[in-house]
Image (cartoon, protein in one colour):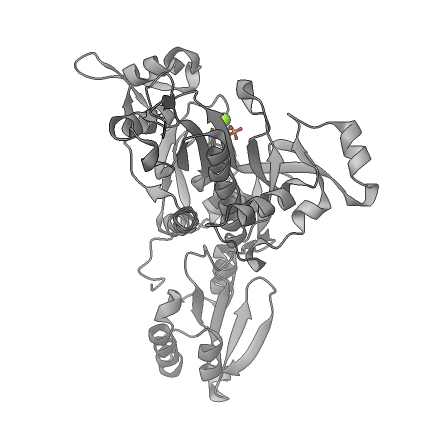
Length: 438
Ligand code: ATP
Ligand code: MG
């Protein structure tokens, strides 16, 4: 993309309404624009990041054996009356009435809808297990929408639902999602710590929230530093082997890690030596949850077992805040100059900075780079602007690499390759720059 064609409304001034760094940077980098409280439009740069996050989430869901579907945002109130949640949900639910006076709602989540789809088609244990997910907008009329896309009212979520014959099998589905989440967040360049969460009336400890550690997080966290030092991408996981999957989960749940809901100071002090204690704040980016027959029972999602018995299926649900992650990644990865995107979600892979637009030599070198870097999704700053303006903008939008092309370098046959994360600049030949970015 050429910068002169791109719709990228960057802001020079720090917007006063934004309280946290990710929100400020998303507005300054022209990623999003508020439409009304907690509701955002995604502009080209932000939209590209959102789609990349979505794609990483999708690939890791598929890898773990889940199948993608797409359910509507608008749901019928009757379905929610059958599960008993229509009255329980409260003012967070956006309730709508259609022209025939039927009660509808804008989905805050999809347990009822997916359970109904399952119940319509699946009757036998032979068709289990199943994991179905979608990536869809949700609406929750939050009391205090804030921090930009991190706590919005309309937000994009990946929600997966598992269906199993018995607890043992449901636990395996849960474990697969646990591992899939570790992989997903690691690929997004994040250290997300799984923390035991409140599992509601069903009991057991089959509920984990995944939090990334950040001072601006809304949750208090207490954890063992060991939790943060794992390298998930370094290990291969065979989803076909229940033992291998279980082993990863056990390893990651061993160190102490809890939010305020479940924190126990005495246990924390007994289990974690002072030098390994982390006490701080975290941002919830995912939540996994086993809830047995809570929805399958009232909504009639039952299957016949091998002995001909009819039983409600065991279910779990697994959410990732896709739009929240755009903010969370920035909270975890930025500096004074702006955003520092991990390669996996960067809106463009490399920026080309032409220091003297209009100079034949510079222009032709940049055109050459632009064509030959097509596989890295280059953004070419071809504006007739001062070098300082271009540098500041490139650093603000945080592409992982910059190739800086100026007349003096070109006379010696060189360009500069800058790594955004380290700030290191290297003078090398144009060919070596291309080779390094191959
Ligand atoms: P929270 O405690 O932050 O309100 P929740 O417990 O309501 O989250 P879930 O219902 O488990 O969240 O939703 C799954 C994921 O969706 C969360 O882990 C979070 O990443 C994301 N999410 C939830 N609410 C919002 C919101 N208002 N804005 C953006 N993302 C959200
Ligand atoms: Mg909530």
